[in-house]
Image 1 (cartoon, rainbow, N blue to C red):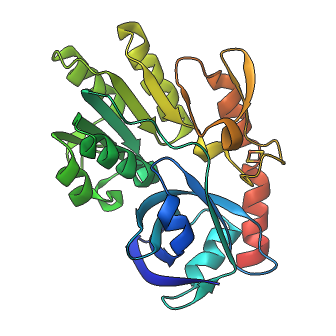
Image 2 (tube, protein in one colour; image 1 turned 90 degrees about the vertical axis):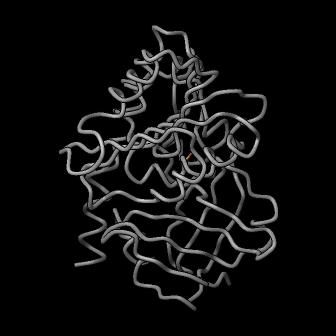
Length: 273
Ligand code: FES
């Protein structure tokens, strides 16, 4: 069993869990994910790792309550245990050898962007970060981002905090100001990653996206995370989650991402109401 040693509600629908899982913590790398089950009857859900502490033997995940399983998870308290917590899975994000990078995070995707950004920083790169949220109340991990970034731009849709507007506008401003990035790394809603890739393409800036939002069971068996990348079929959970954003067929990916929303909503209502 995997004990929750810390539970912190970052926002009403966004919760941080620090889980005792020494074997996972020992091997975890930024960009990788775990699969958890809340209880014996629970479904398996993949969650990308937010942080890990091999000395303490803990792994931190940040979870947005979006469906039945994440709601069940939210009902657990500090000291309670998860049935399963398996990982780390997926390929780690490549962070070595970069001089200057920009990490773009959107919403709860910032939980995944943070360990990648920190690793770029620890590996010696100059790190710029652009993070976007709907409004001030939804901003998460600001202090963490500030500690590991040389430049931080916070954007909100309604202008209630930081710069008003989209992360793509802020990214374009940084590029047009003469910042020459070796790489842009983006994680957030599918549409955001699509437009980050479209923004960097004319400049020829290599762009990596994390396709973890499309994963369903994370095991390579359900086929739900199938993507077309450079004309080849890939599975986000087995071949990724990181891919070249300029090669992803975004129309297909966005469509696939929306496929299970109605089912998830129905399941949520059935389980939680
Ligand atoms: Fe099911 Fe990748 S998430 S096959």
